[in-house]
Each structure stands twice: as structure tokens, then as C-alpha cells.
Length: 385
Image (cartoon, rainbow, N blue to C red; front, side):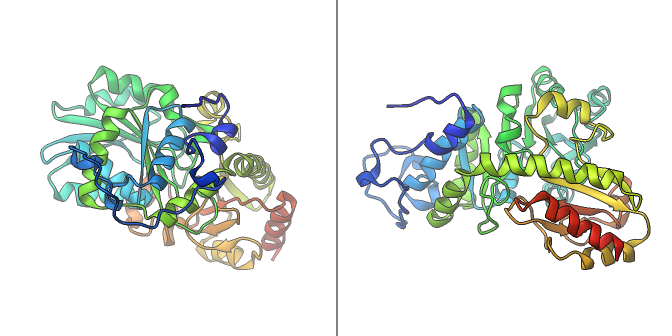
């Protein structure tokens, strides 16, 4: 029997779970089997096989993820980039064109500007905050529009309400990378997006111990992505499925803490005389705050900022912190700090980074669930030194 739950906190625990429970197990078991007994399936994608993403561990995740964003369907992948690349390759062929936001995660930017370009798929970079400029970039062969809910690493928020309507008017597929917001803060399908993509390595899992991805959205589109994924082989293994499934159950309590803590830390940084600029959509001074205020239930645990001074000063500050771990990635229970120019966006040229406003001195902070005051005191100590 399908059970419908109203609130996301309850969905995180109960949506998609086996009914009845498997041998009465409260925790979903790991089905560590690559092969399953043939049961007369006539469709290739329905054959039970681990690479086809349809083991019991996969199926539970698919149902739960779809429920979290009030979408029709979902599929998990071997990584966030696996979700992004498979989705784009599903709907774009040589000769096609698409529109994409200019400020993106570095891996996505490189895949679009180098790998897709090498396949004969063209693109136009758009300013997501200026919808009036999009139509002039359209071509007869334009097939999709791709944005990020909150951009990495500048935390920009566009008027995301406009994207789905623009896509429908012009016959495009609308896609957004919803990793930074998570389903707790924003559910793209509720606003008309066709597809929502996630690096589940981040907030959905929340414990910095797996790499995983997901695509959530329209059932007809997910079916096509599944078929492409089954051939490309970016499969999530059952043990990683188990860890993602377990991690997701605490998303609500983690995200509430990170929403609140990141906002308090952003306010502290904004008021500090040694800080030049703070990027966090929860701040009234941040461009895009007016959209975040209308769209989001919270602004997430990611922020970035620039100190007064040069790269050496930024590096010295990072070295002088003791609580944040100096590392790439984000979204875990521990606070992480990095300079995007050396990690997430190191594949971009300095010229491309600077054109988008990503300076070499920019510092990105992924706020964990430690005591907010402890994080602030550690930052204060590092600034004094």
C-alpha cells in the first residue's frame, strides 16, 4: 500500500520504505548481489541486475527522493557528475544547442565547455539574473536550459520562477542543480522544473563518506535518463545506496542547524572590518536575496567571502583556522574550508574565473553542525592572527 506523507521530515524517514518490512528489519538491508533471478521481464531496463540500477536498495532511494521533492520519479547515480553528464547526454546530441548559467561548479563548466563542445554540442552562457537577455540566445536547435539553484561558489540566486516558464514557452527541458539548497530548502518540481540534479555526496548523505548523485523529476524524462545511464554504467553500488539511505534520514535536523548557523556566521563576517565581501543569499545585502526570500525555506550551509588583502593573506587565514578542515567538497557534518581557485574551480583559467567574479582570494566555507559560536570564535582567532 502506498502511503502519502505531508511533511518532508516524515518523508525522509518513511517514504519509499518496503511494506511490509523485509523480514521485519527496521533498517533496509544491503542487497550485495550483482545478479537477480529472471522473472519474465520483456524490457531491457527492467531486468534485475545491479548495473541497471534496480536492486531493492536502488528502488527504495528512487521512491524516497521523488517523494522529497514532490516529483514523479528519481534515479540515483554513481556520482553527482554522473547525474549531470548522463542527463545532458540524454537530451543533447551533436548539432544541438542549449543555454546554461555562466557561473557553475567547475566540473560542470569544464564538461560543458570542453567535452560537450568536442562532441559538437554548442551552448550559450547566460546571466541567470537577466531573463530578458535569454531569448536572443535561442536557436532553432536549442533543446534545454541549465541553471544552479544556488551557484557554486558565489551563492547567486536567480529568479528561478522564470526558468520553467521560459523553457515551456520555447519547448526546452528545464534543469537545475539543486545540491546547495537540498530538498529541505527548495523543491524544483513544485516550481515547474522538469529535472532536479544532486550531488548526493553533499547534503543528502551528509557524512562525507560516499560519492553519489541523483536526478529527480518528470517520469518520462527519468525513464530516458535511466536507459542512458544503464549503458554508460554510472551505477551506485548497494553499500553506497545503504549509506545514502541512512544519511538522508537526518537531512532535516542537519539542514536546519546548517541553515541557522551559516546565516549567523555570514552576519558576523559581514560586520567584521577585515572582511571585504560576504556571499550568502540569506543576507539582505546579497544580490538574489529577494528571490531566495520568496523561493527557499532556508538558504543552506554554504557561504563564501573575501578578506581585505591578497592571496597570501587569504591562505594565512585558512592556515590559522583550527576547527574547519581544509578540504574540497561540502555538505557534511564537519565544517570545511577551501579556496575554490585551488579546488572546485581549479580547472578553469584565471581569466574565466575572474570574468565570473571568482577571485583567487575567494574563500568558501561549508558550515557543519558544530556549535555556531565555536566556529565564529575560531574564525575570530584566525583573523586576529
